[in-house]
Structures are given as C-alpha cells and as structure tokens.
Image (tube, rainbow, N blue to C red; front, top):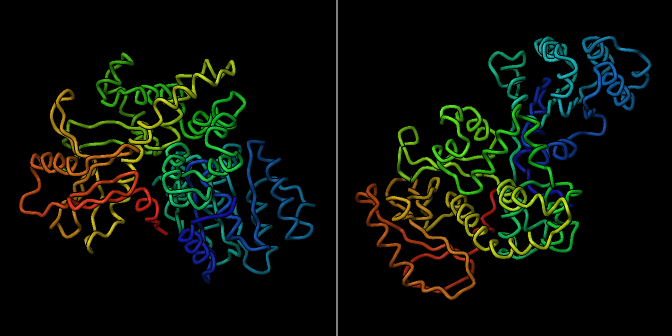
Length: 455
C-alpha cells in the first residue's frame, strides 16, 4: 500500500531532528496507526531503528547492539552489563550526530524499569549528547506514565510530543481508488487505521475482506479489540462488556450501570479510560454546558470498534463454527442504518473545514430535546467563528428519491425550538448521499464531504 498523508507529522519530525543540538522526541498512539512506518520514512541511512520485544533486558541489549553494529563496526563485540554502559559507549563511538529510535519503548521498560532514569541522566547532559533520541510506543497509558506524567523521570524533557491519530476518510479513497460513496461505506467499517486499509486492499471487495479478516476465527482482526485493550487496560473484560452494552443500545450511564448491576459511581474510572484512549466519546446536545448537562450519552467513537461490537461480538458462535451466511444476512439488513449514523458523524467532523460563503464554523454537534418517545433532534448544529451564524443541518443516507422541500420545511420547524439562536442568522443545509437540486438551502454530498481533505 502506498504511503499517504502524514505530511505535517513528517515535516515536524524532520525539523526537530535537524536542529543544531540533540533532540528528544516522543511518539505514541493506538496500534496500527502507522507510527513505525512514519519513523522509517524520516530516518536517514545511518540512523538506528530498534523494535523492542518482551524478552529479558540482557537479550534486548544484545539485539540492540547487533542493530548498532550495522552503523558502528565492532559495537556488538562487547557484552553490556546494563543500559547505562551501552548508551555511554554508543555516545562515545558516534563521530557525527545520528538519530536513535526505540520503538515499543514500554516493552524495554517492562524488562528494565531503571531505563527511564538512565535516559533522564543522558538527556540532562545534552551538551555532550551526540544523538537524537526518539521513543515510540503503542501503549498510550504507559507512554503517558513514562513521559507525560509529572512524576515521570522523562517529564518535561521532550522537544516534540506527537500523538499519531487515525487518518481522515479522504485518504482511504486515495488508497482504495473508489468513489466517494464507496469511501463512506468502507470508512464506516475500517475507520482511519492504515493497517486495516492495507488488509482491505488485499481483497477484491468489502465482503471478501470482512469474511477473511473479521468474520473468521483465523482472521487477523477477529480479536483486534482485545489486543488493543491489552496495551492499555488491566481489566479488559470490564471494558469489553461496557462497549458491548453501548453497541447494543445502552448509551446512558444509568442504563449501563443497571445492565451491569453496579452503582454508576463504579463506572467512572473505566469510562474515563475508554474516553481518554479514544474508543468512547461523550455526547451532549449542542449548546449545553458539558459539566452541568444531565443528557450525556456514551457512544463508540471509532468506526471499526463500533462495527466489531455491533456485528462480530453478537455473532461469535457463528464465526467459531464457520457459519458466515447468517452474519452476512444480518449485515445486509442493517448496513444501511449503520452507515447512516457513521455518515452523520463524518458530516459533523467535516463542518469546521467547510467554508460556506466565506463563513467558517466551529465544532459541530447533534442537538436534541424532549423525552425518548417524543424527541426532537437535529443532526448537525454549529456556530460560526464570528458568532453571527448558526448552521443547522440534517443528514440522509438513502438511494430513494427524497422530498427535499419537505425535509427543509421540517428542519426549519425543528429550528424554532433552538433556544440559543437569539438574533443570529440560521443557515440551513442537507447532507445527502447523492446530488440533488434545491432552492431551499445548501446541499452537501458524499463527494463534498470526502474531498474536504485536511493536510
């Protein structure tokens, strides 16, 4: 698969590593988002890249010394009793500044807890340091604890701290070379994780990729969420259960607690952890104070995780006995509705990057009011950066002929219930699957949303 995006990340890394004095850089983020690939693209031929594993510290030093041998002849001839001796010898043997990259750094620390303190001493003596140091890790919690926590030995010493996030949908279109509509459908399954895109591209169709990689007990992504959780959580079962409940329709804290038979206060820590890691998001109606609102809903934030808990977890019994047909039947019945909710989120995420008659808008959110049985809802609401306009929109993902005039009429009626509009002008819009002509308001299509690429 060709390398796409990450332009700003590459530029920042190259700029930091090319400065006059030695630099300390930290990269972290969810597994399979392309951290290692990014690093390999910016490293020079004489730089040293080492991928750690979970073996003993002495063996790790031997492996590391063997990698260094390719750049510094004779370096592996010595047996290094500890990390301090290894790095001291490395620094003494370097004639011109290079970059040392330690990937999966938490694995090294697991076998050698003293390593962060060793590196602290080295970094605190930068005048004599002859190499840049890059630490990279997939365990977001451990990377926080090792570098970003105020009590950590390496806290406050990094010249650059970069969280590598999933990519935008437009880059998936570039990889798969498909239409905007197909991109929305594919992104609703795979999300923005490059490794998932790579696996999808190996197969002829979305269905083939799902059958081979997801709906198979042998598939590489069959146990993917559990692998992700093991990086950052002690109690993976609890988190797995919470996400399963949310995927089944329990979005309120009280509902989740009731289903688990536990007090709501006991869920604060695991929910906060899932929010911090980016697997969950908390949704409140647009215009309400996040700290005071009692209408908070919990939703699965990542498309692939949501797809997995909606279509894989309930069907594990079928998958284990290789009965894929019932799953595909369920998917065919529910896929349109599933994509519709993902389409709404894509539209909201894109609003801040749409310039409408030169007007720029801030973050968009959903708005709703009333009881669950008699609820009024608007899919997209956003305020302009100058505070003079309110954008109000509905999202529809359908191949059926839509009565656009009726949709705009209903939208205007709903907007009369927005208490925060005041004297600001309302801009009405529709986010549709296909292009439709209308004089009632603005219309954005899948093509418009996908092509809003943010470099």
